[in-house]
Image (cartoon, rainbow, N blue to C red; front, side):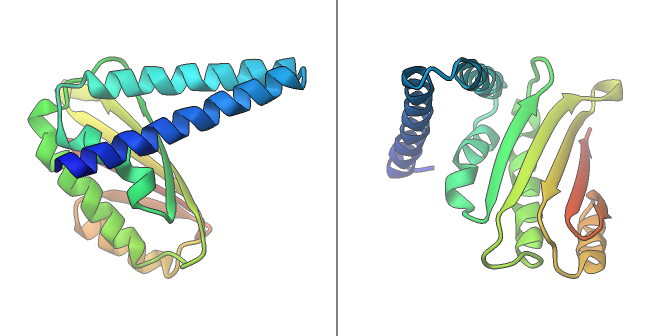
Length: 171
Protein backbone atom coordinates (compact mmCIF):
# COMPACT_ATOMS: atom_id res chain seq x y z
CA UNK A 1 0.00 0.00 0.00
CA UNK A 2 1.43 3.36 -1.01
CA UNK A 3 1.47 6.51 1.10
CA UNK A 4 -1.44 8.06 -0.85
CA UNK A 5 -3.50 4.91 -0.21
CA UNK A 6 -2.74 5.09 3.51
CA UNK A 7 -3.79 8.76 3.59
CA UNK A 8 -7.02 7.86 1.73
CA UNK A 9 -7.68 5.08 4.25
CA UNK A 10 -7.12 7.46 7.17
CA UNK A 11 -9.48 10.00 5.58
CA UNK A 12 -12.21 7.40 5.22
CA UNK A 13 -11.68 6.18 8.77
CA UNK A 14 -11.83 9.74 10.10
CA UNK A 15 -15.03 10.33 8.10
CA UNK A 16 -16.62 7.22 9.67
CA UNK A 17 -15.63 8.29 13.19
CA UNK A 18 -17.04 11.78 12.59
CA UNK A 19 -20.34 10.26 11.39
CA UNK A 20 -20.56 8.20 14.55
CA UNK A 21 -19.79 11.23 16.73
CA UNK A 22 -22.51 13.19 14.92
CA UNK A 23 -25.00 10.39 15.58
CA UNK A 24 -24.08 10.39 19.26
CA UNK A 25 -24.40 14.17 19.38
CA UNK A 26 -27.78 14.01 17.63
CA UNK A 27 -29.19 11.38 19.98
CA UNK A 28 -27.92 13.39 22.96
CA UNK A 29 -29.50 16.64 21.75
CA UNK A 30 -32.83 14.88 21.09
CA UNK A 31 -32.79 13.24 24.51
CA UNK A 32 -32.91 9.74 23.04
CA UNK A 33 -31.06 8.06 25.87
CA UNK A 34 -31.56 4.46 24.69
CA UNK A 35 -30.31 5.20 21.15
CA UNK A 36 -27.43 7.27 22.57
CA UNK A 37 -26.24 4.46 24.82
CA UNK A 38 -26.66 1.93 22.03
CA UNK A 39 -24.58 4.04 19.64
CA UNK A 40 -21.85 4.55 22.23
CA UNK A 41 -21.74 0.79 22.84
CA UNK A 42 -21.47 0.17 19.09
CA UNK A 43 -18.55 2.61 18.81
CA UNK A 44 -16.80 0.92 21.75
CA UNK A 45 -17.27 -2.54 20.21
CA UNK A 46 -15.96 -1.38 16.84
CA UNK A 47 -12.93 0.24 18.46
CA UNK A 48 -12.20 -2.94 20.43
CA UNK A 49 -12.37 -5.12 17.29
CA UNK A 50 -10.14 -2.66 15.46
CA UNK A 51 -7.64 -2.81 18.34
CA UNK A 52 -7.53 -6.62 18.14
CA UNK A 53 -7.07 -6.47 14.37
CA UNK A 54 -4.26 -3.91 14.57
CA UNK A 55 -2.56 -5.91 17.35
CA UNK A 56 -2.68 -9.15 15.32
CA UNK A 57 0.95 -8.65 14.16
CA UNK A 58 -0.13 -8.79 10.49
CA UNK A 59 0.12 -5.92 8.01
CA UNK A 60 -1.59 -6.75 4.71
CA UNK A 61 -4.78 -8.39 5.93
CA UNK A 62 -5.62 -5.69 8.51
CA UNK A 63 -5.09 -2.98 5.88
CA UNK A 64 -7.26 -4.92 3.43
CA UNK A 65 -10.02 -5.27 6.04
CA UNK A 66 -9.84 -1.64 7.15
CA UNK A 67 -10.14 -0.43 3.55
CA UNK A 68 -12.71 -3.03 2.53
CA UNK A 69 -15.92 -0.98 2.78
CA UNK A 70 -14.46 1.89 0.77
CA UNK A 71 -12.85 -0.24 -1.92
CA UNK A 72 -15.78 -2.63 -2.41
CA UNK A 73 -18.84 -0.41 -2.85
CA UNK A 74 -21.31 -3.31 -3.19
CA UNK A 75 -20.35 -4.72 0.21
CA UNK A 76 -20.49 -3.69 3.85
CA UNK A 77 -18.37 -5.83 6.12
CA UNK A 78 -18.04 -5.94 9.89
CA UNK A 79 -15.46 -8.13 11.56
CA UNK A 80 -15.06 -9.72 14.95
CA UNK A 81 -11.96 -11.35 16.36
CA UNK A 82 -12.41 -13.87 19.13
CA UNK A 83 -9.71 -13.28 21.70
CA UNK A 84 -6.25 -12.13 20.70
CA UNK A 85 -4.88 -13.79 17.59
CA UNK A 86 -1.56 -13.70 15.72
CA UNK A 87 -2.33 -13.35 12.01
CA UNK A 88 1.25 -12.55 10.96
CA UNK A 89 2.28 -15.98 9.71
CA UNK A 90 -0.83 -16.18 7.49
CA UNK A 91 -0.93 -12.52 6.44
CA UNK A 92 -0.37 -12.96 2.70
CA UNK A 93 -2.52 -16.09 2.48
CA UNK A 94 -5.43 -14.42 4.30
CA UNK A 95 -5.27 -11.42 2.01
CA UNK A 96 -5.07 -13.57 -1.12
CA UNK A 97 -7.99 -15.76 -0.01
CA UNK A 98 -10.08 -12.72 0.89
CA UNK A 99 -9.43 -11.07 -2.46
CA UNK A 100 -10.18 -14.29 -4.34
CA UNK A 101 -13.43 -14.80 -2.45
CA UNK A 102 -14.59 -11.29 -3.42
CA UNK A 103 -13.62 -11.88 -7.07
CA UNK A 104 -15.86 -14.95 -7.10
CA UNK A 105 -18.69 -13.19 -5.29
CA UNK A 106 -18.48 -10.26 -7.73
CA UNK A 107 -19.47 -12.65 -10.54
CA UNK A 108 -22.73 -13.47 -8.72
CA UNK A 109 -24.05 -10.18 -7.36
CA UNK A 110 -26.46 -7.55 -8.67
CA UNK A 111 -25.21 -4.16 -9.80
CA UNK A 112 -27.45 -2.11 -7.53
CA UNK A 113 -27.60 -4.45 -4.53
CA UNK A 114 -25.79 -4.09 -1.22
CA UNK A 115 -24.32 -7.21 0.37
CA UNK A 116 -23.81 -7.14 4.12
CA UNK A 117 -21.26 -9.40 5.71
CA UNK A 118 -19.85 -10.40 9.05
CA UNK A 119 -16.41 -11.95 9.35
CA UNK A 120 -15.48 -13.84 12.50
CA UNK A 121 -11.83 -14.75 13.00
CA UNK A 122 -10.94 -17.38 15.59
CA UNK A 123 -8.33 -19.93 16.59
CA UNK A 124 -9.64 -23.42 16.00
CA UNK A 125 -8.52 -26.84 17.09
CA UNK A 126 -4.80 -27.67 16.93
CA UNK A 127 -3.99 -23.96 16.53
CA UNK A 128 -5.64 -23.68 13.12
CA UNK A 129 -6.94 -20.29 12.10
CA UNK A 130 -10.62 -20.15 11.24
CA UNK A 131 -12.53 -17.51 9.32
CA UNK A 132 -16.29 -17.54 9.09
CA UNK A 133 -17.87 -15.18 6.53
CA UNK A 134 -21.64 -14.65 6.61
CA UNK A 135 -23.10 -12.69 3.67
CA UNK A 136 -26.66 -11.48 3.11
CA UNK A 137 -27.92 -10.42 -0.29
CA UNK A 138 -29.46 -11.93 -3.40
CA UNK A 139 -26.85 -14.02 -5.23
CA UNK A 140 -27.25 -14.98 -8.88
CA UNK A 141 -26.82 -18.63 -9.83
CA UNK A 142 -26.16 -19.73 -6.24
CA UNK A 143 -25.37 -23.32 -7.22
CA UNK A 144 -22.53 -22.22 -9.48
CA UNK A 145 -21.33 -19.74 -6.84
CA UNK A 146 -21.16 -22.50 -4.23
CA UNK A 147 -19.37 -24.79 -6.67
CA UNK A 148 -16.75 -22.14 -7.57
CA UNK A 149 -16.09 -21.31 -3.91
CA UNK A 150 -15.72 -24.98 -2.97
CA UNK A 151 -13.34 -25.57 -5.90
CA UNK A 152 -11.12 -22.79 -4.50
CA UNK A 153 -10.90 -24.45 -1.08
CA UNK A 154 -13.68 -22.57 0.70
CA UNK A 155 -16.54 -24.39 2.40
CA UNK A 156 -19.67 -22.64 1.16
CA UNK A 157 -23.32 -23.03 2.07
CA UNK A 158 -26.16 -21.00 0.54
CA UNK A 159 -29.64 -20.62 1.99
CA UNK A 160 -32.51 -19.48 -0.25
CA UNK A 161 -30.13 -17.69 -2.68
CA UNK A 162 -29.71 -14.81 -0.25
CA UNK A 163 -27.65 -16.06 2.69
CA UNK A 164 -24.14 -17.27 2.04
CA UNK A 165 -21.89 -18.86 4.65
CA UNK A 166 -18.20 -19.35 3.83
CA UNK A 167 -15.79 -21.16 6.11
CA UNK A 168 -12.01 -21.10 5.78
CA UNK A 169 -9.44 -22.97 7.83
CA UNK A 170 -5.73 -22.25 7.59
CA UNK A 171 -3.16 -24.46 9.27
